[in-house]
Length: 372
Ligand SMILES: [Zn+2]
Image (cartoon, rainbow, N blue to C red; front, side, top):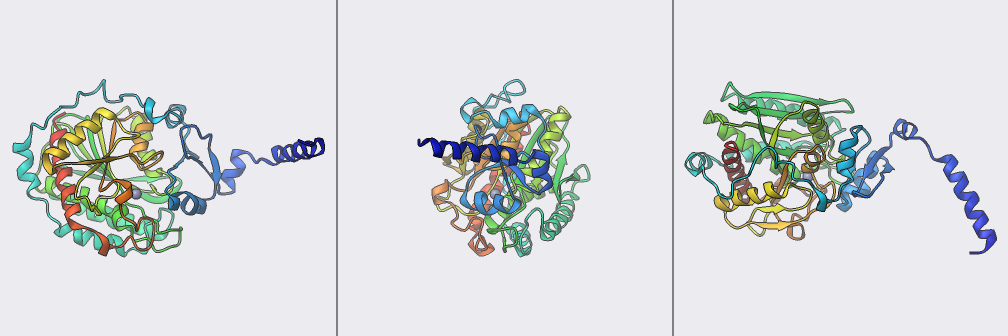
């Protein structure tokens, strides 16, 4: 390099160093620190850039701005291949299903009638962006709907889990068991359609996952199903903003020392040309994933597989807080919905056979895993 050019470069980098704002100044300016890989130290970006430059381009990320737990940061920096077996101390997952006599009559109660009504309302919100008033209104509607579904069994509790940095709440439903150990079915309910202000019906992503776990709740509540392990249904806020709702919930569970036997996350359950449930294999607990495939195969037939990368969905928050998670999707990525994160992720594109399949699987999973 020419000496003069080198000097110019050094001068430039010196002024660059002097100009680098502190984390506090970045935060005060409304920027957020996101991680896009285990190796990434973090990049400061605007809220809008998170959606337009990362989410829309299917670059997975985790918003770590408010994560202060060094163990969580350490796990977020641990490659997928080095994921520890979180569940090993708590549980050994069975290699076959063994509760079909209990599960089958419940699985047969699953229908698309209520999911169609719920998804109509969910997709009629202009969007469900976690920082928009629509996103908050969707949260209020969902809380009220979940509460009325859960009312079929007075033992069930419904809690609004509020987040200090934004208004959209996460929602947690609990069917108490004789054991306090937890088996969790989760889905995020926020949505984006290309920017913070775009129409974002979020039918497949992830209204579908929401109505799937809500239908499973309806069936188990109506039957007054009394599990051994405690069952929870988690409806997360702010997933599209970098797994924010689930990060808050699992941080709380980690601090409280809760025992979690399984987190089964569904993010997209309503568009499946293959007609098969897809069980993804990265950033998850491998033995729980094997068990999930055993259940899905027994109750719905052959499954497919894929990987979706870093910060893909809320199962990553369970993993980073030390809990075993599995990720269940409607299709491998290459043949998945072409409408994701656009105004065209509409109710009319949903394939109800997929919703039905995932809702049946969810009931089966919760019944089988409730005996862990
Ligand atoms: Zn999603």
